[in-house]
Amino acid sequence: MTMRLMDGSEAIVEAAIQAGLRFYAGYPMSPATELLEYMAEKLPHHEGVCINAATEIEGINMALGAAAGGFRAASGSCGQGLALMQEAIAEAALNETPIVIFNMARNQQDYFQATRGGGWGDYRTITLAPKDLHEAVEHAQLAFHLADKYRVPVIFMGDNLLARTQMGTTLPQLDLAPLPPKDWQLDGTSGGTGKSRQIWTFGCGKTNDPGPGPSKHWERIAAKFDAIAEVEARYEEGFTDDAETLVVAFGSGGKFVEHVVREMRADGHKVGYFRPVTLWPYPGEALERASQGCKRVLVFELNAGQMIDDVRLNVHDRKLVKAIGGVSFDESGLNLGPLMDATVIRERIELAIHGASK
Image 1 (cartoon, helix red, strand yellow):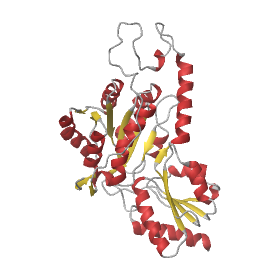
Image 2: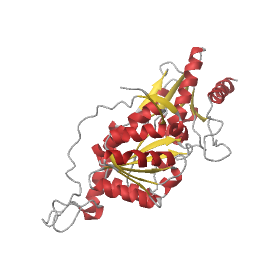
Image 3: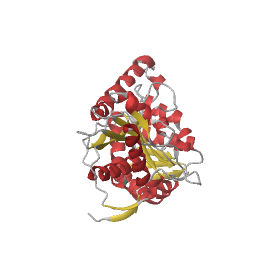
Image 4: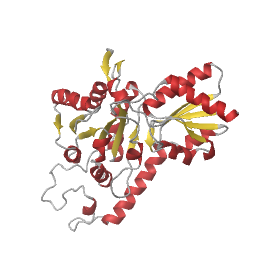
């Protein structure tokens, strides 16, 4: 395959279309605007539709309608835009409508939004957090696969560094397992038969085709998310066998931390790294194993402390956990700030090590 120089937004769009995306309705907020622009340019060439929605609520509900019809559909914005999509994301989860939501975030402050959500009911959202463009190309395909496999919403958690970094890629296509037929899709073929299909929680007990009713339906949804959590937690780790210091980071931050840890290892430091690839389900059991024997567990994230809650819940001794990140924007308030720097990260790791040894 031919290597192409692409920025992250273009590569993500082409990978999504390669995965079968045919409908996108998004809202333009930096750094998600480029994603929408590439969708508008490229989808029509693949018999697809892209709509620049007037509001975030319109965008997510348009995509939800397309997904209910059986099409691979997506919506997206940055975290501020996703804040207005929370009700529809919850509806997608509770009504079992597969959809992908792209969050090209301005920082790492949307962790709680992605993993806890702001909708109603008992639901979760599978959340993929790629570390670089190459992994983003894979995740753009994997997101649609997981959405269809489990009939759930999947969040793709990017950032402005991922969206705008240019790298060479061949856009490799993942070899994913076959999926069940979409025998639930609303295609109009059963209208007037008394067995018309519905995608609506409260329609589960409709009179002409009695179902389990809302309570039993929600119990089944809860059990499904429990089952997903058992098998879909993904992570990457390195140098954890003898690490005295473990550094946990996600997304682009995980890429920087991995680089710093490799440098420190070369200099003789017993440091390891752990990166959750899925923010939900969180790979807690793997983190617990990786932290065994460590003297300290450091958490690098560009926010006031969000993932650190999940780290504390899952390491073998929560008293060892310390934050080494923080809120960090540039002067515009739209881009990653000075903490996303390998030199700064190393200084903070070394300070945590040497300060603890005094």
